[in-house]
Length: 153
Image (cartoon, rainbow, N blue to C red; front, side, top):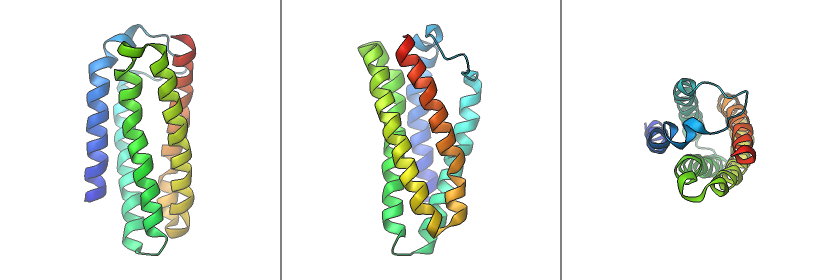
């Protein structure tokens, strides 16, 4: 339950930052030609946060010596995930393009942290590692959208 609650809090805080800006500056932003429609992000993130929480629970319930460092890396990636959304959406009106570059740095760190988490989760629970693969794929995809935005806005 703790893992679902943590994911829900991160999702809610991210949505709060997004909702306040997605219909603001982002409407007129130059977006990558491969950008999905805005309505798709909510369902995708809901599925990803759920899979992340289940993966963390699978690792936690094993209680192996490797579980603690794996869950620490999970916590780090969750914090970076939480940091990206307000950096990208909320800081742009204040900092302009610099905020998009800062968000790009955060998302690159997130890719690294998720990769470490996948590598640590896999040996503890193969299912947990596999559950994170769509997440890392989506974050890499999101980084391409972020890079486009930074280069073109």
